[in-house]
Image (tube, rainbow, N blue to C red; front, side):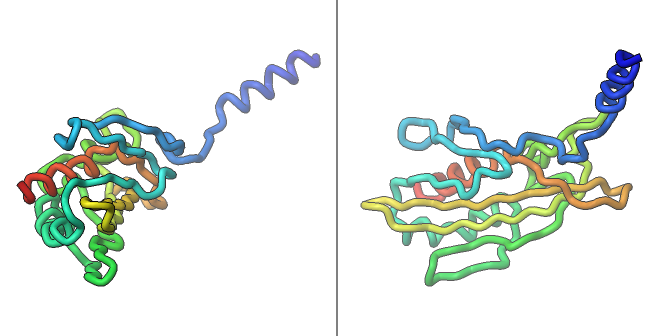
Length: 180
């Protein structure tokens, strides 16, 4: 009799949903080739990773001047521009399927369904802010990126998505191309 009670409890727990968002919430470190000095930058990606910091070999003033073109190139509208703190970005915008010319799933992991990556078919809400800081003879780029998604056919709250690190790498790539 006790065995049946334990078996029933295991069956109920096994069928229960966690109710959490799809994807990892732990930050992970990933090496991504961006064509920089040494060819690889170490990026920390993930929903709880916090700001991403990269060192560039170019002076902060030079990097700051090309950032509006970088945002245009990646398809992110600029709504925040502060020359005093050298910060630029968008405090939050909605989009679907593509960011610039790239599929959303290239940049974000929002889980998958039977029809493919959720990032490619869900409504996305993205916040991207970048600050340029002087660092020796070069500069330091502090990037804050957050994304969340929700299905377009159901009324539900947004769930956090993880960055794949490729948007951050693309930003570095475009900056370096602009400054060569």
